[in-house]
Amino acid sequence: MDNISIVIAEDDHKIAEIQRRFIERIEGVEVVGIAHSTLEAQDLVEVLEPNLLLLDIHFPEGNGLQLLREIRSSQSATDIILITAAKDVSSLTEALHSGVFDYILKPLVFDRLKSALDNYREHTKKLVALETQNLNSLDQSTVDQLLPRQNPTVNQPKATSLPKGIDPLTLEKIRSIYGNNDKGHTAEQMGELVGSSRTTARRYLEYLVSTSELIADVSYGSVGRPERLYLKNAL
View 1 (cartoon, helix red, strand yellow):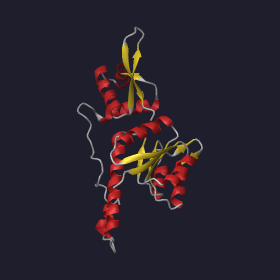
View 2 (tube, helix red, strand yellow):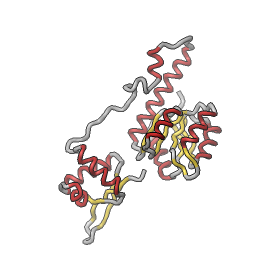
View 3 (cartoon, one colour):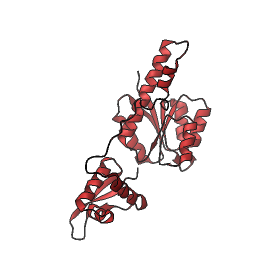
View 4 (tube, rainbow, N blue to C red):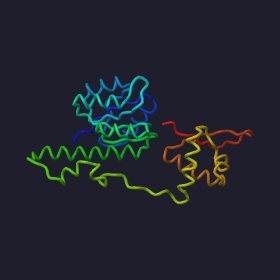
């Protein structure tokens, strides 16, 4: 089977480049075009006819959901995965009604993207295999295997528990602090905010760096001593 061709539609050049680099690390898929506007995305889909479009919702000059509707109304064979910061239920509902293959929230994590693309590749293989069999009719079990929402255990990432020493309540408290204030914090500052030691706070911050929710930088204090400064990942 040939590589799955992908077009990235993302107005932020940095985020688009990160998506491209993530995809380069995944076997069986390739980026054939990058669009930074909905108009560019529409042109690339029409000309290149990719298997898959990775689509954002918010663009300065347009809306990804509107483009999604237009692509669907044009009878295009391109499938769509939304990668977006839109966390409202109405956006998710509209996306599902319009037939997206998957819906991924930012900040984009490599493992989540890889899982989505692996699922899509397996889904495509099943369809191709059925087409080559020239079946006169389908049975229910075969249909169920092709409908991921009817068969949620197939090719879904396994749930992972938190590492030892990471309490979910404390973790959510730290996440909420960054949700309300995007400025960076050192481990000592975070320890004061959550009522823990510097060492404990650092453990949680480093865990959030490992999941790409935070990034770490070097800051020099008033006496010139370097400290790790933990900032919210803008992706």
